[in-house]
Length: 185
Image (tube, rainbow, N blue to C red; front, side, top):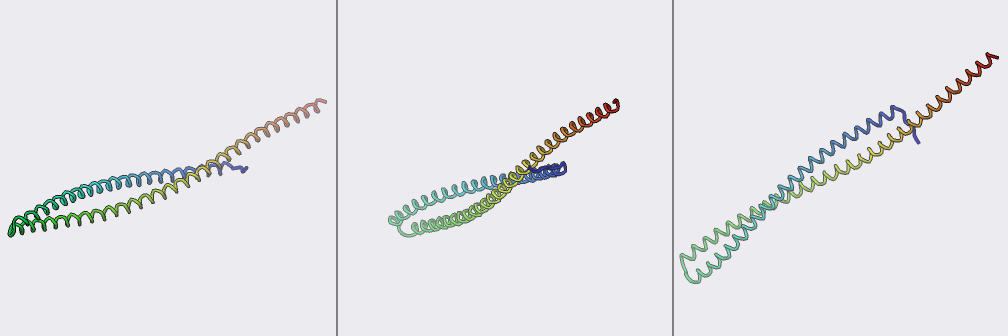
């Protein structure tokens, strides 16, 4: 076993305190990152909900478009001329609206993909911070073991010193007694 003096023990205590401070900083940073990640996830879910609403709107428009198309076909068959032209223009307008909605949905999907990439980067950073925290915890455990060993060694030295002091004291008393007996003789 290795013995440590008081200065080394104090140095180990200081290193332990520094590591604890670093761990607290990393923990706070991880909490901040986790809050940011949760916020991004909430934002991401909100975007998904908006997209789902848009998809439902598109489905409704498609159904309306198909119904109108069917009606238009019936109208075309029944009535020729200007009336049929009016319906065709309306369908073209609806086609334009559907195309516009599709463009919006494409942009929203691109935004969603960007959010997913950002979330992946955030998770990677969080995992790296967790790894550093684990490594520092292992270092702290090692320092704690060294400090414990140093304290045990110090206690053993103190006990040995006390025993040595007792023996020395006893030896001195015996010599004084012997000297006193010789003087009396």
